[in-house]
Figure 1 (cartoon, rainbow, N blue to C red):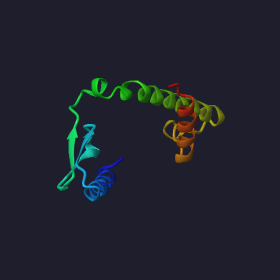
Figure 2 (tube, one colour):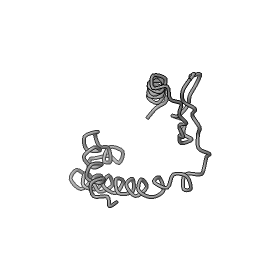
Figure 3 (tube, rainbow, N blue to C red):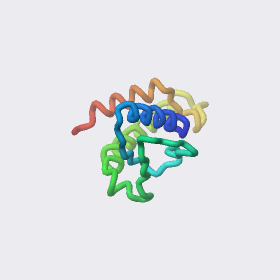
Figure 4 (cartoon, helix red, strand yellow):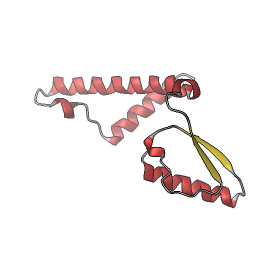
Length: 116
């Protein structure tokens, strides 16, 4: 996600909260894409989580998501090795590139095989 997508989503959410006459607190990760810029939100208070607290405040990042990412990376490495073995002229940079469809298929496969 980039800042523009996040800000558009946040403005839409603020509009929905205004229509519902609700005020909410939104806790977000401390990443650059969560920049608010000069946005004025009337019904949302955004609070960034402190840096270096992921393992304490976001255990999924340290557990399920980290495991998912490691397994995804393993598929990508296997894919690159297969490409090298099939074509010796493939360079190191392009060997590991995949398209969006492949990434989605791998993600679906990995997520469906993740135990609760």
